[in-house]
Image 1: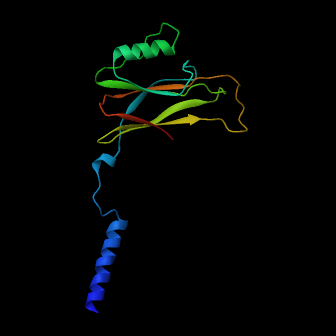
Image 2: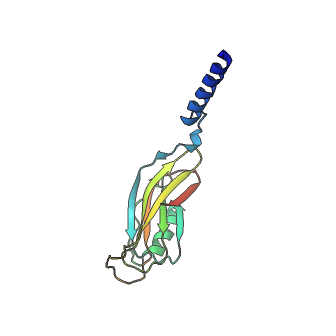
Image 3: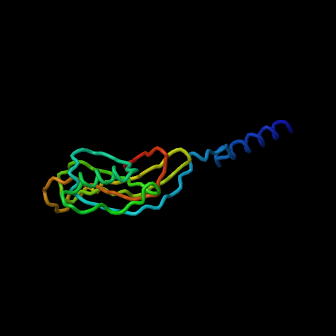
Length: 152
């Protein structure tokens, strides 16, 4: 009888530990929010297809900005190599109400995760029928981690 109680106790403790995450956890899975600043958000990037970009040098930033804007407006300041620019180009969309927004940037021990969303108008929302090419550029602290862009 004592053996049965002891076995039941051991089984109960094992189940509780398993259910409560009693196993070891990896710090690689822990995501920490990273502060970022929106530099530019527009519906006219000129980029026809979905594209994400990590811009780590002034030359890359100058080229991306020239491709984005036809005006001779200088790009927003970025302190390379202490900072980098992350961009999501949504590609062509059929409505003036469609936009893209980088919502969150997070780091783990093994990667940087950039979460972004697309705003799509509802069925009763009135929007101009025009082809747009949304983009969002953000400035963030530089990192050498591989970047994983994830649509929410």
